[in-house]
Length: 240
Image 1 (cartoon, rainbow, N blue to C red):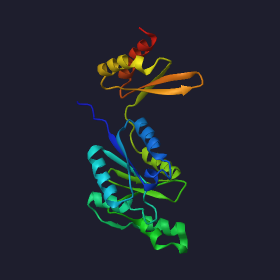
Image 2 (image 1 turned 90 degrees about the horizontal axis):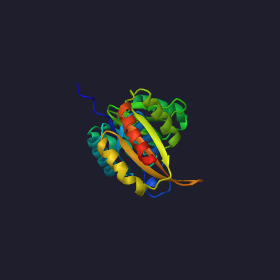
Image 3 (image 1 turned 30 degrees about the vertical axis):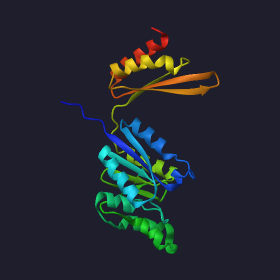
Image 4 (image 1 turned 180 degrees about the horizontal axis):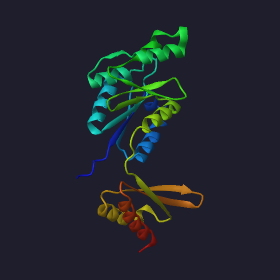
């Protein structure tokens, strides 16, 4: 029986504030780490401006490239929050008032709720809400497109809730630290990578108090594959 192919994900970070540098992104790295820990391969990331055409096109391209699309940002009440409409456009469905979302908004804002705030309940047809335990804010999903708030604390809590319902796939990892230079390591690591195509090997230079070091990280879906590649990297570092 053939092995089930690994699930893949594409991350979209939406917002002119990220592109302009007004706000530093904290979400892409968090999502990439958590998805990788679940055994879901992140095949791409993209920062998208707050335009209907830009977001809709990015969602369509991401859906073609990966099993899961996870987007953050652009679902608030301001004039440039157009992610809801753009996702609907990309999926070929209308936006319509979501009763549960409207109820939450009315409870949260009370009698002073504005029309702009109520429009946050206009979601793509078929959307299901993604809730946070400690917050009244929510994201939504349509099929395998997940749209989360851009505020990091909200995104992290909602994503954690989503991830608990996903079955983790095989993911094994080990790392080494060496004072050898990357240029010295490159031929050996290239040979090991070629011999083990199902294993991901990365080398990352870092600066510690003790001086320059290279961190070598190995990731695999099978523990045996990880162990075999790990032994070869260990031998390389020992000069064997």
